[in-house]
Image (cartoon, rainbow over all chains, first blue to last red; front, side):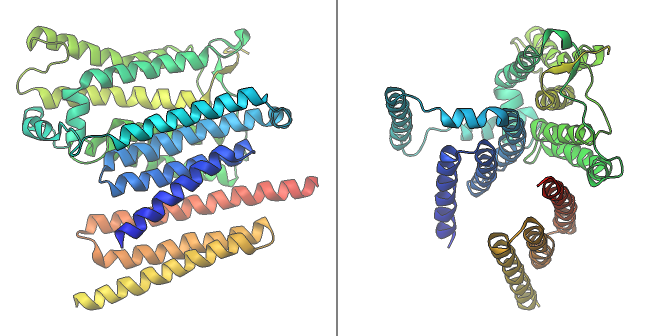
Length: 313
Length: 97
């Protein structure tokens, strides 16, 4: 019975992927991609990777989906021209060959995996006691491979700076996007008043249970960022000018705390990002508490986009 | 008692699934945006409500059950607001035509 469901799920995903690639309308392709992300979430649940499933739903389906919807609506004006234009046969053949080669390489890689697949899971479970956290994913992300998580947080800050640099000179340091206007008594404003208190509690909860259960700062931060964006889109709040001191401090705070604790480890525990005995859990909580607001800020501002309006009108 | 609760679960979840099927049929077959929205919201509200109701006897704790009910309430809130927004946009476009 489960097999039938799994095969059906896999077939649906492949069909959606093909449809998202072949759809001529950009908006339709984006909607297909979001549905594809949500189905992938189900696959991760089936594989018992609930942490990955949460991330896929939050980042892969939600955040990337929102970014792509924004991109598709901006490209709407140019779409007819882009559709009328047909690349030369040589370009098309080359693109097809490249795509086929990448797919073939991936397929060969997957088929040639040793059985059983190499795993570090037993070592993780054997050493998880030291970290004081109960969720092995959190232990890997913030203790055994903390370096990766640190670099990931820094890369996100760089990505945001990259988005900002796309704004026109006049608006540099100004507010991202256009001012959203919506009927103050309308349904969107209503939702933006009712949902954020619930969303902030759910986001904080998902962040907090990450220590021992599936969840964590990334998924929690996405939910909190979504609540802020909802208020911005309903016209109840405005995105802050990106030159504001609190924005800049907030963006740097998370990675800076992470690096400071890492350097402290170099002095007290003998290696960068090592935690002194007995303090692992408390230091992990400090890092997570510092990273969560930074991540929420980055994710929300990534969607808000490049500055479009000067800070002082 | 257990078997009675199992029967309740099965009946409720099957009924919920029928609502989803009917909602999907409506989405595919109804002629305009408003009737399609009408069909979809029935699937969301009643279908999901029945599925959640059917799952309640199977959960292992009060907290899990409460979470399920909250999921249903949130989906209803989001679904109602989203269909209002879709309907408003559809009506605006109709006026422009």
